[in-house]
Amino acid sequence: MKKESWGSRTGLILAMAGNAVGLGNFLRFPVQAVQNGGGAFILPYLICFLLMGIPLLFTEWSIGRFGGKLGNHSTPYILDSMSTKWYWKYIGVFGIFTNIAVMAYYTYIESWTFMYVIHSVIGTFSGLGKEEISQFFDQYVLFQGADFGIPLFPVLVYVGVLGLNVYILSTGLGGIEKVAKIGMPLLILFGVILAVRGWTMGSDFASEAFPDANAWDGINFLWTPQYSSLADPKVWLAAAGQIFFTLSVGMGSIQCYASYLKENEDIALNSVTAGFTNELVEVLLGSAIVIPIAAGFLGLDWVLQNAGFGMAFQTMPYLFQQWGPMIGAIAGVCWFGLLFFAGITSSLAMGTPWMGFMKDEFGWGKVKGAVSFGLVSLVMGLPTVLFFQYGYFDEYDYWAGTVSLVIFAFLETLLFTWIFGMNRGWEELNRGADIKIPSAYKWIMKYVTPVLLFLVLIAAFVTPQGNDWNAAISGLFSGDGWTLDNSSLISKLTFADLQAQVAADPNQTAYL
Ligand code: PHE
Ligand code: NA
Image 1 (cartoon, rainbow, N blue to C red):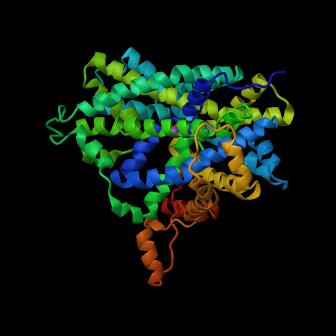
Image 2 (image 1 turned 90 degrees about the vertical axis):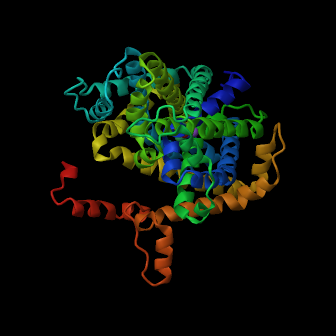
Image 3 (image 1 turned 30 degrees about the vertical axis):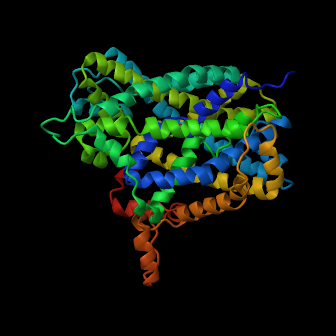
């Protein structure tokens, strides 16, 4: 049988860019940027991209293509083949589970975007006031459909969207490539349309209630660098976390895609191209839609106080209506359609590691692999869907989408640069390369990246109270010790965070 591989270089790049470009670019990035001081966030973010993002892309593409040469398509088998120790296989399995846990909540948001496209088309939001549109979302996620007839319908939509993912996955690489070839250009088209709107709005929509509203305030806030943030570990951690999530590193999904490359096919230029595509979409389009449009109507102060999911699903549909029903509907389709394509090209990427593992381990074919992935994701996903209001969603995002990525990325970096060896690794990376990678990267990958990843990990363990590092450090020097925040990994692992929650809620309503 002929080895399965990508149909064309364009297909490969679009699939890899589709993997990376996701909800993270449009929903997570703007919120992170706003919460971490706008222009204060950008510099640490770009430095993290260069010193951790790019090296991790190099590492994961190399690991993947190396594994594919031996006929392996999942991290348990690939990592195992790179060392002599037994435990690497299990570290690889840990990566597979991260995919499923992220898939569980990611597909849920994807299903919202799907429904919101339909609601934009059929005009559900036209004529509704701000409060009503915002209530619509609340009732959707809380299953309280008294006014809109919603209960349990979102669960069906979720299962349907999961089913669509399973179907596409069952058609193999060809199906994934096709979705990327259609979805990525449309996503960029929709994004550009909305971004142009964001850039040209100015203060046209300032109102009596928001006389200072100006879209340019949003853009300037993001793009005026503030150097003071360079000394704040909190901003660095948020920047590093965003880089991991947005590039899809630390889960084994890039390795799986790369394992379908041919032995001497370029990875140096392809990996950088896919990575930069993600960054362009993130910093140019991701920052040019929600924030400027919301600032253009409601003012920057409003944006600073309300950054979150709600901006995308509650504020945007309302604001689009202000452009009239026709343009409002078009803008809604562009926005939620963009989110849907961004989401599905990424969730497909989360399915392939599991399928690769089932193939490597049990010889399962695509249909069996895809269906079993769907079932496992459903079992993991239902709690986030049904218990959304109790914060399950955030727990998943914390453990899978934040902590696990860093642990996995740190371990695979050690494996590649120190155990497999940087000299062999460098050779692997450069075989068939279409560009010359600056040799400084050999040194960065071996020393700088692992040290930075280790620091990020340590910081997650000991996050100080209120995430206020400067206060904690001066407290430490003046002999007050170090107070952990409930969000620190140590507090989470010792359940101190739960105890604090119970103590703060004597009736324990949070658990009913
Ligand atoms: N990079 C994707 C995003 O930005 C998320 C993702 C993570 C996709 C891991 C695949 C694997 O939304
Ligand atoms: Na991304």
